Image (tube, rainbow, N blue to C red; front, side, top):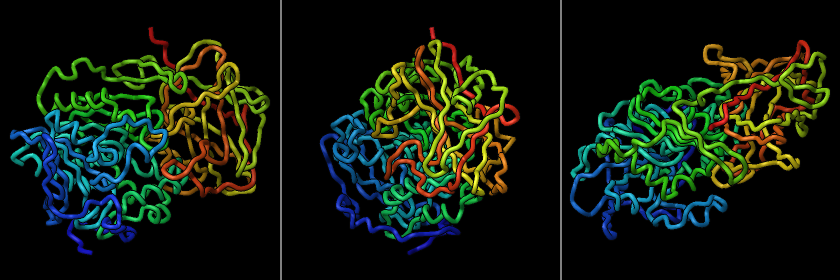
Length: 551
């Protein structure tokens, strides 16, 4: 393994999986292919500032000219290695993606026909690219800067570079944009977490090992070595430098940006996308908050047209291309396939009112008035749960973040992991589910998590609606003491008709079952019983975002 100056390695590595062993791998080496009106150059070598050589694939129109370039930068392998029609049952991906379409990347055939160059990268340490692979680091941002500036001076480039793609293709743009490459002119953040620890690796401080294992399998194709994120999670269970160094400084992100995220991506990308909306410095920004499955939405023809329109504006200079876009497009969920849009100039939406509802253990209710009498309810910490509910008397829309203030005891334990769910039931008592992640339909209204020993808040960043645990120091409990937890519940948008019910579900295990690339927390600290206190001096409450009904 050859290390370069950029390969500062204080963390744990694992040997890469030989890319040649991948049955989909086309083999390494420069190749030029002409296919219809497209030229495809495979394994073009690009030398980074520290001398490291990485390899990219370039798809460009055959006709001579200078074209805008759309860059995809992700560690999954730039070659296609998934059959979109069979790999993800239930993903509802529109048929017809060409054989050149890499995982979560634009279809080069479609984009080159529209006059764009598509470039996909094997980053440092992925595939045959030299160095070792590290994820979401400032070094990765410097590498992407170098690729952007290299692309800007190629004979087929008009000098205007944008970034696009789902998930990591979008996430990598945070660090790159913070480096301010001169020729980066527009960014699409399509499902883009920004904080590895908070958004996906540790939900509420609870390790998400189930999903990490599947993710590492997809990001380990390397001739050298890659960061072992599973091992690093065990070595760094708190929010230390390992994690903070991977969070881009969004105040330096000032290029035009379109953010897209789904309520369905709770536990992966939703929180980070909304954090970016709040913190990026760009004066030109738009956001699409939707209820769709991510891959299905990304590849819908009308969505591809919108992606092209964004780049037509910022990579080609067509001033009118997106004049009719609202700054905020927000889809509110009624039921699984029934949704409606709201438009606004801000998020949270104009007129949002956060109202506090109180838990009452005596009858399992939620109420706007706190119960006067103290009470409690308990459940088995490993397998039990307790619920509190409210029936709406009028049509109501809840759009935005929520939070739960919980007074509780971990009886017989010095720690506890709490899994919070908000659920919707129709007037007949049937649960209403929604689209979830890329290929499921068992989603619920909202999700939250919290490890009791990591409950301390960063007061400088916390608000009542969005508590911000610092996750820096373990504080265990003793003698069954009652403690206060302030648990953020991820943003969502849901409509309730009169007679429909909201249920708050508190439990000691995951709210949504699954495996593989689904947020799961197979190792937790629960034992004994959890006791939830309500009323009196130990009142517990739920803060919800109510918005005025649109005319």
